[in-house]
Image (cartoon, rainbow, N blue to C red; front, side, top):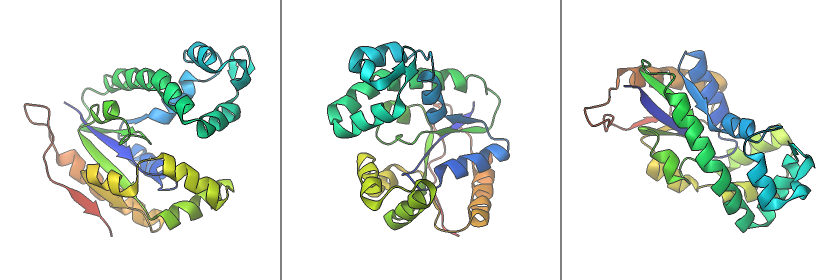
Length: 215
């Protein structure tokens, strides 16, 4: 039985880079963001429900979503965010469950979910939680370098996510990512050996040991 690791972290934590390193090691990788993009791509199966909720104002054309308009709407209206999640999250979860069946013989796999902690349904789909952890100052600096957003905009995004403290409370394993790409790679290589040696017991529960990768 495959051990599924839920990979999460706040914006700017380096979660996507960590997922890539796991993938480069040959580890199955299920990306919830990619599944979401597929569901909301042109002619995606989530579009009719989104149109019913928010109307033509969040669409470029009949079958093409205006992502910028939708993003602005959900940031301005918390209720709109909740309504959108009620449409998308069950669809994403079904896609994750389907993807998991493609790797019956893998020792372990990564399920990459930015909002893993915020959604109990996703937590139930994983056996362990790996948090990529950085300070808020590092988050802000990295996002500014990557996207050019100002500090206020970045903090607004951070505040829509689970707090750093909450993520760490849920973590089985913590990977501190304040250093270089080389350091991150070495830490993940260590976790790869660790996860490859873990097994699920007869009840489908992983070993209870906790790791913290700081070096």
